[in-house]
Image (cartoon, rainbow, N blue to C red; front, side, top):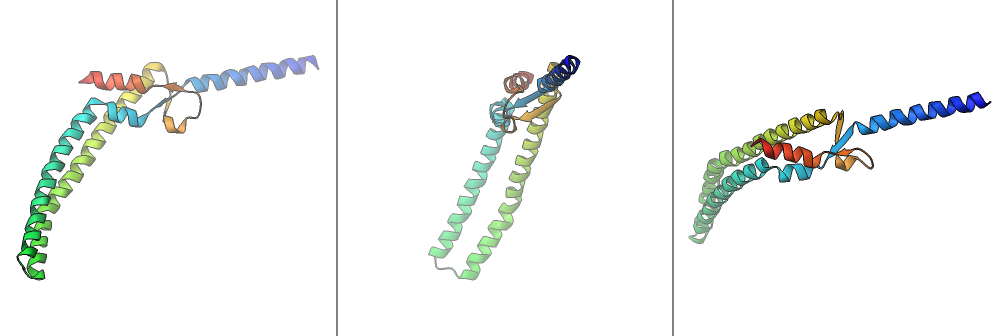
Length: 153
C-alpha cells in the first residue's frame, strides 16, 4: 500500500512539473497597447489623418456646391447630376483611403507579429496569446515587444 502511495505521489509531481513547464512557455501581449504605442502606428495614423482631412475638405466643398444649386432653385435633375459628378470624382479617393488604411494596418500587423515571434523565441516561449484570452499565468511580453519595435527605427 505504501508503494502505491509513493507511486501516486511521484506521478502527481511529474504531472505538476509538466504542467508548470507548459505554463512557462505561454506568453501574452496587450495587442491594443502594442498597436497604439508603436511609433510607426502613430506615423501611419498621422499620414492617414492628413489624407482624410484633405478628403473631408473636398467633400465639404462638393456639399456646398449641392447646397448652392438647391438655393439657386436648380431642378432635382441638375442637383442629381451634381451629386453623380461628386460621387464619380470622390469615390476613387475614398477607395484609395480605404486601401491605404488596409495596407498600413497589414504592414504594422506584420511588423508586430515578427517582433512577438522574436521576443518569444529569445525567451523560449512557444505560444503567445492576446491578454484578453488569458485568465491567469503566462508571461507578459507587451513591454518587451514594444521596446523591440520602437528600437528598430
